[in-house]
Length: 167
Ligand SMILES: C[S@@+](CC[C@H](N)C(=O)[O-])C[C@H]1O[C@@H](n2cnc3c(N)ncnc32)[C@H](O)[C@@H]1O
Image (tube, rainbow, N blue to C red; front, side):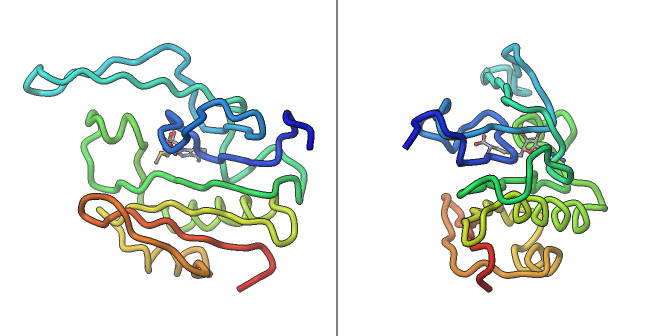
C-alpha cells in the first residue's frame, strides 16, 4: 500500500497526545483551531509549566468536514468533554469546552465522521465521563458503540468502537 495514502482521519487532533507517531503518514489531522506556536501555561501555584501545540493539517469544524463521502477506513473522534471547567484552566486549553448545545454538536460531528467513513469502516469514539455520562452521549448521537473499554486512573475515559453499516 502507498505509505502516504491518507486513510485515517483524526477529526479532533488537538495536541495529538493519543498518537504514538504524531505525524503518521497515513493520517489526516484536523481541528477547529491552529496554534502553530507553542503556548505556555503556568499553574496557580507557579510550579507547573506545560506546553501545547495544536497544528492540524486541516483546520475545520467537525460538524462540516471538508472531505468526500466514504473517504477513510478509520476515523478517530475525541471531542471536548468538559462542561464545567474554568475557561482559563489547563484542561480547557488542552481539550476545549462544550456549551449547552453539546448534544446537537456531538450528534452532527458523529454523523459527519460516519459520512466520511467507507462502508464497514471503523470510528473510534473517545469520551471522558467527568461531566457527562457516556450513556447521554450515545443517546445524543442515536447509537451505542459495539463495544468499548474504560481506562484512566478513575476509569472516566471510555473508548468506544463503531462500525459503519453495523449496529
Ligand atoms: C479532547 S481534545 C482532543 C485531544 C486529542 N485527541 C489529543 O490526542 O491530544 C478535543 C479537540 O477538539 C477540538 N474541537 C472542539 N470543537 C471542535 C469542532 N467543532 N471541530 C473540530 N475540532 C473541534 C478542540 O480544539 C480540541 O483540540
